[in-house]
Length: 444
Ligand SMILES: NC(=O)c1ccc[n+]([C@@H]2O[C@H](COP(=O)([O-])OP(=O)(O)OC[C@H]3O[C@@H](n4cnc5c(N)ncnc54)[C@H](OP(=O)(O)O)[C@@H]3O)[C@@H](O)[C@H]2O)c1
Figure 1: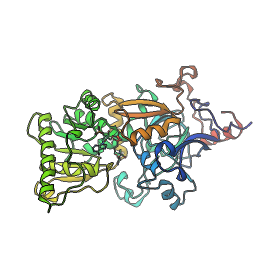
Figure 2: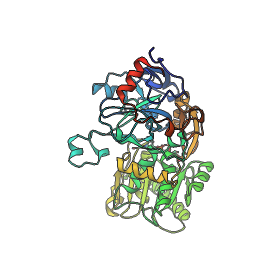
Figure 3: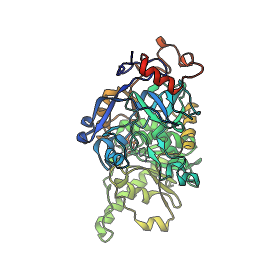
Figure 4: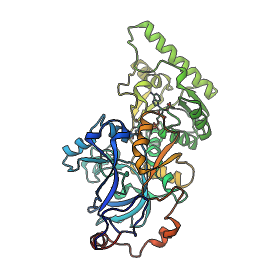
């Protein structure tokens, strides 16, 4: 008897058994647009791991802004981009964060074994790419791509296909949904704050954090505190301000009190520029009030982009750094070069993180020093709604997750009725061939 075509959401088959098909929240080109409509639950074939690859049963998946972009089809049509490189799939399975169980491994995989509880990081690269072999940081390699955004078969599905170096130990104290929530934003914030020497946050450094209650911001506040810096957050509401303070922000600014946002006015228009400068200066004075002294931020933690970059460049301390990983409000980030060169500031682009930075962040989470800031847990069917809330900036502070294989929230291991993973792990662990032959002839 063959394995059933598909298992129900929230059901966990016997360890290592591979169903032929799976449920996934899928985006298709004809549905590009508002995230609520772009995602639909569909049945697709379970991808089979090739040599060197790992198939993970997804227990929970984290929600990130990148799949707002994927759903919109902007600024990149991720399906067309993959097809141009020869990918056959006409669909996108997003999801760049997950917790789960290693379910099958291709030949040559020694880093993880079937049954290991893992969290997944989203940087994929070709270890044999010429630039990586020559010593490039993998996330800066021309071969680097983000799993669950640029690469298909992300975590909004019952199974996901990854590379071994993406698998990190799941913090045992966290539930599956907590464990799925932090890696993408946490590792991105870690690289922004620690990856660009000499501008690594150190004791006593004031750091301005845009969107302090957001995914990146909630991680940045904690990391700045962890390294002895002074986090000062920016938000747009009182409840988000309260949230940032609870997380450890020393001060919080409400951006609604100012209106100088957006592109710089023409420097030839003295009135318009004067009014912009007055806004930036007033924002700076509020920063000093929150800090309790007249010092500017040594690091400005940027991702809002067009709306805020001129202010970030203006306010950053002499010899400091504005480090930016996105342009949520727009990509035309104006820089008044006078502030940049005369005051010797640095504008640094940053994108996700390399495997070492992911591991360093994961260690901090495993030690309980960084909280995943899980705000809300939904079923997989609500993936579109979660991204819609995010798109409209109506999502709760912190990070959201959806349950996929986990039957209910609150579990840190298998549900008690199935025993524990440690007990369920067979010795020796099943090979891919055994799992595949079970999928042909066994039961799920
Ligand atoms: N390159 C990378 O590796 C990487 C990694 C992670 C995320 N990102 C990108 O970074 C961005 C933020 O991600 P996230 O997960 O932190 O999203 P998020 O949870 O939505 O948080 C972003 C926060 O930014 C603030 N914000 C929104 N519009 C703003 C504006 N016009 N001016 C100032 N602040 C604004 C909002 O806070 P308030 O309204 O309270 O101010 C919001 O909470 C997204 O574009 C995402 O794609 C990039």
